Length: 444
Ligand code: AMP
Ligand code: GLY
Image (tube, rainbow, N blue to C red; front, side, top):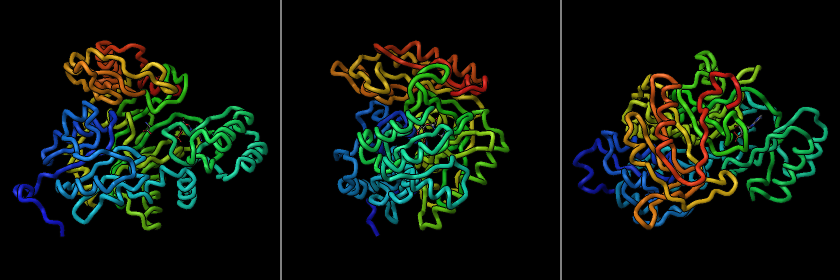
């Protein structure tokens, strides 16, 4: 048994938490956990993000992806009870395996469970074995065999690098020429490195997209309220794919009946299939779905909170988040109590000039305090850092996430827009139509 420092045993209910990750999703998690009655001390690996630093103490060791020894020693020393992991890359590189002990829970699967996201070919096999509805697809290890298959087809396809490619490894094609070029880019030019050792060529589906996020302790599943991401850069669903330009919740695109269907046909079979493979999956299971004429079909699984879905969901969640995440990570999800604010939340992403290809950073940001001062508005820091003069400047592609709550979608969006108008940095890109597609029935 690990020896516990005296300070901790004074109040057994309070948990020391380490938060891993440095974007807007993690700022939202830090904010929500800092309001949890169950929180002891919150530490974070990425306190260079000023939003996270406002709620968490820094770890005393430099963070390096895949080098978990120092972080493990830190967790032992500070009696960390719960590690909350934001990004998929850390999970795929085994942070769960390294930090989980009998006394320390980790929100997020081990590397074996993380394959659901880090290997699209593995996920495809699991879906097939569990009869989970998904696009028909085939996995190829050579460009030649993939191209031969593409040339034998008449319907449009989607070409995907199997491994992690920061959300960029999916190429939706209109023609076979485009699909062939995509395979060459992934496998010959190695545009996504080793993530392209295998490609998946799958049927191109159509329909509205929705994200279903669920907490699971490896047996029980709790489905969070619905939300919808907006992946394209520009209004009207135009422009290149991005990590996500905004989200809103709840999303009326899914009926209660469809939600029950997703629970029964997707989430439960996925958890059962993982368990059959001896994988104890404790964390967030995220299914990216397309609502086709033939019913909901899985486009992808993720093994963590979506970004910016998390930022739009957490302000609506009524719960002691530390307690809920601990219950999830320790196999006692059924003990968790979660309620939902009935209001609508809208999250607008403010992105840098040049995003998603070549974001320009180092631009001064103004108006943050004014925007944050509005009622029912949260401004989460994604790619933001302190500037030499003590202000804030842009430090990444997606810079800020402005979330507003309102009684209706229009009201929430108007409030988010009001807050966004107060924030300035040169070259800012944003969408003005978050949630509008759901009502108009077009692509988000
Ligand atoms: P993924 O990372 O797999 O979710 O793919 C990124 C985006 O590509 C999705 O949000 C969809 O817009 C699109 N996509 C992925 N797979 C398909 C498919 N089989 N058919 C049509 N669009 C797809
Ligand atoms: N917003 C999409 C994702 O987090 O994968």
